[in-house]
Image 1 (cartoon, helix red, strand yellow):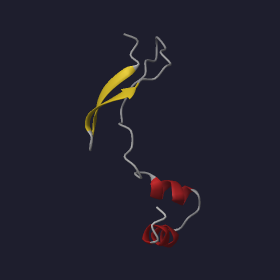
Image 2: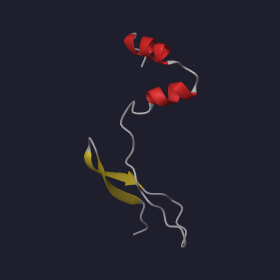
Image 3: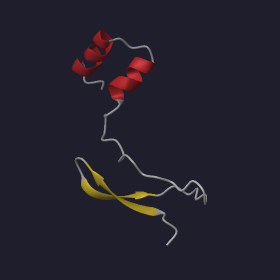
Image 4: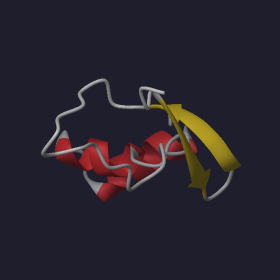
Amino acid sequence: ARGMVVDMEHPTAGDIRVIGNPMHLADTPPSYRTPPPILGQHTDEILRELGKCEDEIGRMRAAGII
């Protein structure tokens, strides 16, 4: 009744239920546009933001670190 459980479509998991946003403001209700990421989906992006180059990321992947 409070919208704390949201049903959404996930690209690999199908229909899923996620926890809704606890902040409910009358003029700006929460919207749920994207499903949660799959495991490792943003790994390369985060490592690049931390200053890792593509070669370093490739070596970590080859070594099984990521």
